[in-house]
Length: 180
Length: 459
Image 1 (cartoon, rainbow over the protein chains, first blue to last red):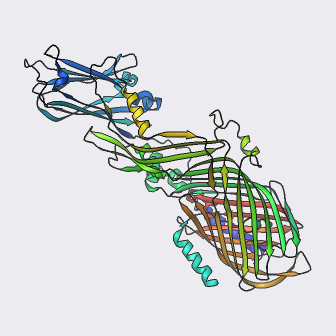
Image 2 (image 1 turned 90 degrees about the horizontal axis):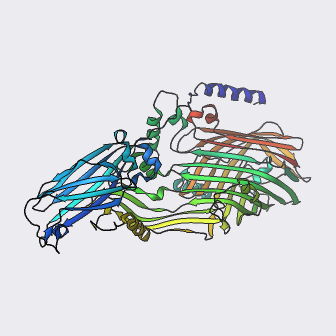
Image 3 (image 1 turned 30 degrees about the vertical axis):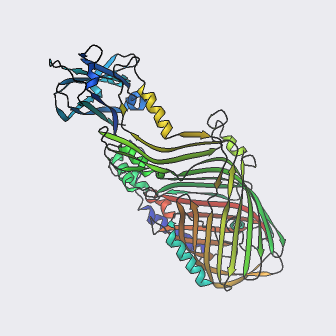
């Protein structure tokens, strides 16, 4: 085969293959992602002694605690969070009913968001409650850095017996939805 | 002997993963640069020297698991949809690789009738990163859709090197049938980043303590670096330092190449080589990170209601995590193994015979045509990566030689390549291009290989 023939053959092959070339578009590369992350947040278990002042022999009507809520510390999360589902599972073996308030606070302890108050009847088992925060309607939630939990003992007229093994248990996990 | 070679090659194919990288210049004996791929190659030169920075430039790269069309085809399909299809298709053995070599200096001279010496210095960049499939899924989709799925941290595997290589080789003709050769290499690494042999899983599952829990199980991960972070914990400030350290100024290592050419008959030959059998010892500018342990996270347990001052639960959690999954930074020395390569080829020459005057008064017999098979393998963190090529060589005149290849791999049975070498007076110019189809139809390609050089050759 001569050099000319070889060159002609290569040229024909290139022309034939060129016709198979498909257009590529590198301009429309807007990638969107909508991940969702499941995060266990807080849990606690209270017994009857937590609600009884043994010194004065009276019920303690309210107890509260504050923990850090670090999920929103990162700007990437704050800027792209769409909504958050908060899943509660609460069991109350007490003969008394309770109300539970969960409040989000900023670094200066200013309230940024408050869930609807949850009423927990006596003798409730694995009561599940879901509360959702749509970030677009609650921008101040993004400033949340702490979570405050307030458990109120409803006044039933009966006194707490600290010797009973009854417990009040709360579990809270969150599912955070993002759009990048 | 032939049977043994055949069995060896078949076993190699069985145990290796096919990889779309070719070394077309291997066994293409008319270029002096073939000595860099096989120090046992036969040479017909009295001496040669390459144009500085131009004697041998090679660039090859590719990825597996998808093609450009899958992401960028102008077909009206949403890019996110394409991305998700590709992400779902990829697995943890898919990878991205890029290699570049530039000969700074290259030369050689004949010591005696049977011995040829070659030497030089080249710069090399080498990267391979495997698809961290589970981590990518976790980042892109989140953990919520994947309850009870164990995301493996072992999928995080990558390695990058920038180094200079000073080398000296000897090629010796033992008999009319046999030529052997070896090359000593001194590596000077200016940059190394590698994370291999990671293990452990991350799982989100239902829990009895809280509604869900995060589980880190048997986590053992590490990243080793040298030349990336200085003593003040600053990232590499001046990229030019990468080049200046490559001439014996970086972390040093030692390596060897071995090669052989054996003629079963005057027309039927076997060539083989093992390249970069060596290591680099990283002692300067090292910075390593590691973490290992087990941890189950159920959220923060509130324990002290009405406490004054309130308890810093987050600090307690952080301390507990560090105690169970300690992470360390250190400046320890470490050894990095070079990606050893294996080449082998069987070639049968035929057709019109011609005699070529060589460096002495002797003559070497050449045939105008040859065909054969060759295999190239490179040892990577997750095992050898293999390419299988059939080729046809044709001499078009005394000084113009061509090579045409067809390579099969895991993604395509039709990867075509070509190479040529021609002598213009004392000037030897060679060029190799692989995946010609990919060149004319970029969308359907996922690998490329380019190699060319200019050398002076005295015969």
